[in-house]
Image: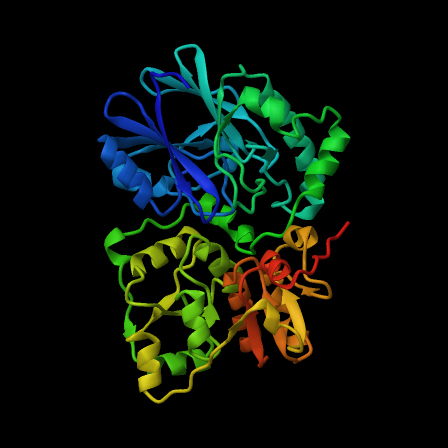
Length: 457
């Protein structure tokens, strides 16, 4: 990257995304693909002494709500986005070849459909020199973003568009930076462990999809790599088109404090109690039928996967867990129906004489004779190695099948234990009892028992 350009990547490890802050050299900045949770972006801009003057979105995001409208409201930022996206709020609509003068630097819109119909990449230029390209959900490090978010019936058509878009980007100079939005951990399809940024030259040398010259083979490879994704992906693009409501940051740090009796009544009336404490705390004692979704980087993903957007939510947390962090992560994916939180936490629930539940964590040597082993990892993880005889249902699909599963003693497992504890809570809500969670994952079991894992062909 040119020494004249200062760029900061702001990474959300939980959603697997990056947004970018570009110093425009006059005390202002361009931000690309900023999420609704602007705390990290604000911190980076504040540290550099920058005011955000432009907010660009590469596409109508399905995995998070955009902050573009918020930045226009708070900072007077000009929103740059595809005209074909038909956004229902003030923005500068761009199309193929349109240029934006950033003051010394320039931005050129490149039509790169595939991940979405209206997808744009933004080529950043210093004079006539291409510095880098914000590729959004087109070319990503080691792969390309999924093409099935507009429906399986359009996945092949969009995969063919993605093929053309990647070839178009590949002819940029080899030293051009590749700055994608989606990265490792994103359900928009990025390979695990990949770097967040790259260059055109590096991608030509290492990205297996760029090495496929035949369009049909490319389509087969891309579509064959697609796994499941959270259901909130199906509604966020429309919310981004309309523009998420502008938020008042002062209202996002607190919730009504609810006594145990009120929480019990709300739960019995259909509210979902979300226990955000670490899995080991949930294991020891929890409100019966509470969903275990630990407050960690992946909190938003599993909250959106397991909790319907229309459901009222009551939070349980430990005093040392930041409520604002929980609320902002939820707002990032459009969940805002928090009724309140359990005042005093689980201790107050027990002190009120209300019943509690527990879900034991067991070691590999304790599995024998405990009944069914249910592995709730993603399909690709299961295929790479699992316990012989294990039943496989992805955590995201378990709610739809939990009531149809035979009620029997069950050991839940994943890679480390958090998803397995979440799965145990889903089963408990569906009436299952005699549940346990395996400490660790299949590798830990194989090491402890000396037995081999089973792999899918």
